[in-house]
Image 1 (tube, rainbow, N blue to C red):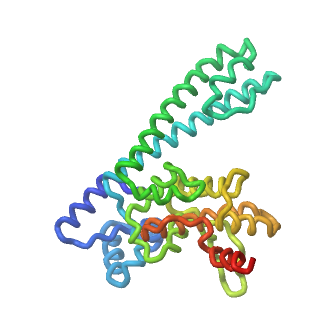
Image 2 (cartoon, rainbow, N blue to C red; image 1 turned 90 degrees about the horizontal axis):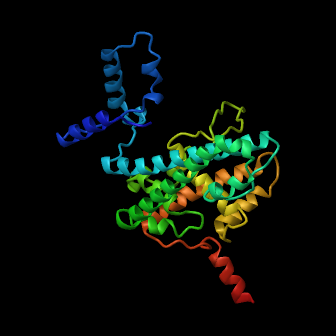
Image 3 (cartoon, one colour; image 1 turned 120 degrees about the horizontal axis):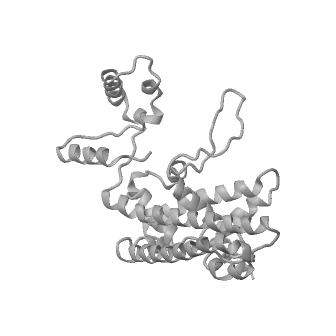
Amino acid sequence: MEVGAHSRWANQTLKDLGHEVIVADARKLRLIYENPRKDDKVDAEYLARLARLDPKLLSPIFHRSQEAQAHLAVLRSRNILVRTRTMLINHARSTVKSSGARLPSCSTTSFHKQAPEFIPDDLLPALTPVLDHIATLTQQIYAYDYQIEKLCQVRYPETKLLQKVSGVGHLTALAFVLTLEDPRRFRKSREVGPCLGLVPRQDQSGEHDPQLHITKTGNGYLRRLLVHSAHYILGPFGQDSDLRRWGLKIAERGGKNAKKRAVVGLARKLAVLLHRLWITGEVYEPFFASGLTVSAELTVA
């Protein structure tokens, strides 16, 4: 849940005055928002009773610092430009296709350079401003990429450890650090997966225990980045590693949606691994899990 600037200011002010502050997740408190006689006084009473009984019942949320929020705004702004560029490229392709022609396959960064010669003359007045805007967006995205790289190098050097993992670049590493901000608020690295909504929902009752989709709670932007990284690791350009071998083994089991399960499972393992590297400062070893086996095979040989 995103928290407003006023709420964040109030939280910090109360902490400065020596109070313990618990910010409840309103989506988890059906006792309050579904109360037929809801008012501020009743809400305050229920919150006080829950906090006195067990603060965990409030599903406390974590407040990011103002600096982290400002740097996250850089990532989100870049994401908006990338999505806008994709929409414009899709618009140009569909417009040309509707006239019976086709635009060439090319990267998004070179699209505005290669597309014009394949656009029919009667569509140039309509699509030339679109191509110009795509070119401008590409330059602005490059500027954001440079800014993100500088943030990693100067302000968040811990991202260098995370980037040792194949498929994790400046963008994913910085988003991971800024979203979690304080790695020690997780008792175990395995808690990061559920926090980012990368675990299956559960609706078990007696013998009824259906397989459900992932919860998709937490930060959706970071979750998408981790999924993209998992796609790269499992793709043709992914480097051989324990992560890749594990994901390919899951995908080879076959069955319905085996590849999707492998990607999501790998994204979850990646989140756990990145948190572990961050909190311990260890250097990533691609074959850490299979190192003993490899050593044994070499000894026998």
